[in-house]
Length: 330
View 1 (tube, helix red, strand yellow):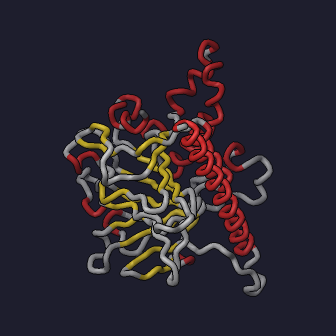
View 2: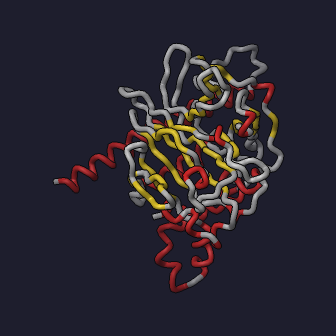
């Protein structure tokens, strides 16, 4: 009975995810159509909120004129489709007000809805969701300060060479789509951040159902006195919308309490396909204490699940320092 209940529960979550993502993809497409047809004298009303932050209890949209194009992005047939060159992705980036001490930046349209769908489906296909661990002195430990679920994705640098090995290729065939997906995405993020692919840790998806959270923490191991997880940069990519407005606070945002001193911190509202980038250490390698952050729970009683993907950039090549991310990929 327990196994049947677990299967039904996972099926319910997956169906809820599919419906939620379908609605958000439709809203995203409508929003982009409105932006492209902006000359229609305001007749188009997008159903999706613009990028926004929460400061001093007030939701504020980011200034559209502050966003700049990211020139390092390139068209990728695997991620963007062969027929989409006429409407290429146009990712943009801006500095988030109040986040200057950690170079907190907002990235718009980092990945498209199709890629979002593939990422989350990868976890459901192989039942990859596990109770989220937290690093304690370099050891994976489940603690009450983190109630989300995590899904470590396959690290493509480790598995790509094995696909050419006839003795292993057949066993890896069911995972080939995920390996290809993570490799193409790794290349795109490496170009964006101007880092080598070998410094990018295995991606980690996270899922927060209403009421689930991750209390204040730092992504750099030195904060906890550990020599592992030396991560100069964090890129958090939102894989779902958690809508908020002056009328309705949906929760689910990523909050940096130490930023914008005196105004209660700066929080970033999740928006599917967008990301937030920050430094965990300065250019001299000194830890940035302002990078402490938390995942605020989506509001209880709501029907929106928050999905996101952690992208951690290591100080050393991951393959030569596997202990950096070992507990993330168990």
